[in-house]
Amino acid sequence: MKILKYLWNHNKFLLIGFSIASLVTLGFLAKFTFSVIYWSNNRDAAIEPWMPIGYIARSYKVERDWLMEQTGLPRDESRVRFSIEAAAEEAGISYEEMRQRLLDAIETRRTP
Amino acid sequence: MIDLLLELFTQYGLVILAGTIYLAALGAPLPGTVLLVLSGAFAASGEMDLVSVIATAYFSAVAGDITGFTIGYKGGAWLQKKLARSKLGAQIGKAEAFMTQWGGVGVFLSRWLVAPIGPTINYVAGIGRFSWRKFVLWDLLGETIWVAVYMTIGVVFSASALALVDMIASASWVLLGALVMWVMGKRLIKVIRKARQAVA
Image (cartoon, rainbow over all chains, first blue to last red; front, side, top):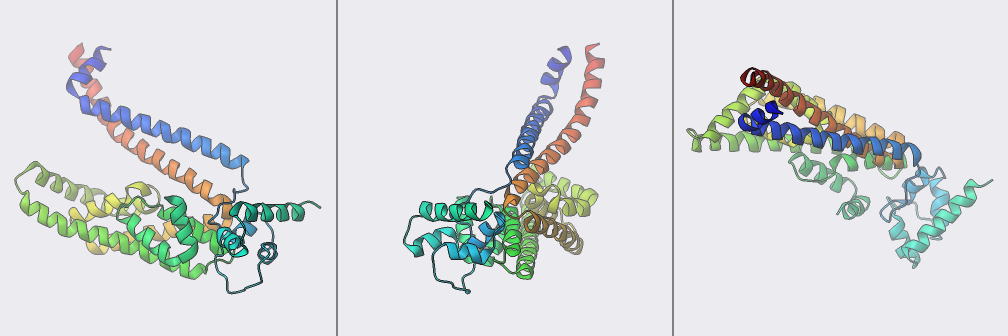
């Protein structure tokens, strides 16, 4: 306690700096541990509006062309990074509807 | 903010990748690493061309680093002239001493291992008048590892790679924090020894 008081009186900034560095490091260590646990349990990525159909296909281990067909849109080879949001817009349905349509299709493909 | 950037990235690809990495190297709070990993994942799913992604990411990162270095170099010389006799002038002298001691290794490791301090090191290297040739050489080596590691993560882990990047970023901060704690801890132990003598 006496030493702490001495440090506070003579090396305030070093003591504060070390305390802050320790707290921040511990905080990131906790964040790291939680993300490792989360990652090992959740490998299927959630679908987001910006995700291209091909990217979703790879994530859910189905063929890209097949998933593209499930959007209900005419086949177009020239489409690059065609996002699920753009697909919904072109099909004239909401993003949520398109998302559900693709998820249902993936589900039937996965179930034997 | 991140969703908007990801949307733009999906739409415009390489241009957004290049801009983000370049600005992130200058210290802008943009997720350059996240886009690099995503590019790897997009390349793996046939949405982007792998070679173009690697070339774009590599050249944008190096260009950003060199810009940061140049700003530091030119700005540092100007500052030193202005502040020759002040405390800040002495700080510039310290930056020079730091770069002489840690220069190359510091540049190399801050490209990929302790990436959060990368932009700062670019400026400090310039202000500290570190050799331009050495800076570029270590930078090229370091960025090679950065691009190779994160592209591979993107290609291999694809959609679950983003969570992995988050993990690596936290690990990087832990490493940086531990480094700061080590440097400060060493000084603190010295001071405690002194304090013990004084208290006794």
